[in-house]
Image 1 (cartoon, one colour):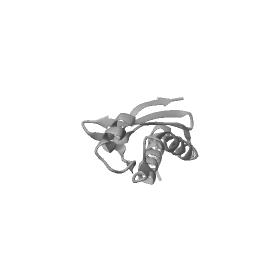
Image 2 (image 1 turned 90 degrees about the vertical axis):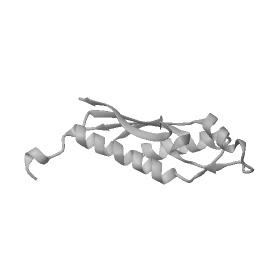
Image 3 (image 1 turned 30 degrees about the vertical axis):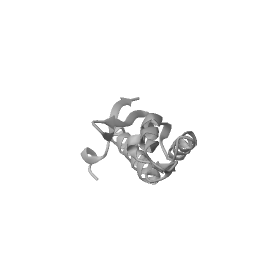
Length: 120
């Protein structure tokens, strides 16, 4: 590989953050969730993703109002977890390059985005 194609630390940190989000979303999508289990599921998600290399912090907030609204007209006490019930923040530190990423609802879609990259 020539030197001009070697990823920078910032690029590697961004890649790592994408891996964390892909894992979080696809590992837990479809998990049964209720207002009573929301906090413990959020903690499990945080601790699971924080195990991955270079991940320094994960914050998962369940949007209880959206969850309760989903269940209001249902005969069931739970529903399936989807991105519309989550707000997530992930911090990755790769070789001193810190990347902050976030997922939150935007125009009805759980949008994952890069918030900031701090080198050194």
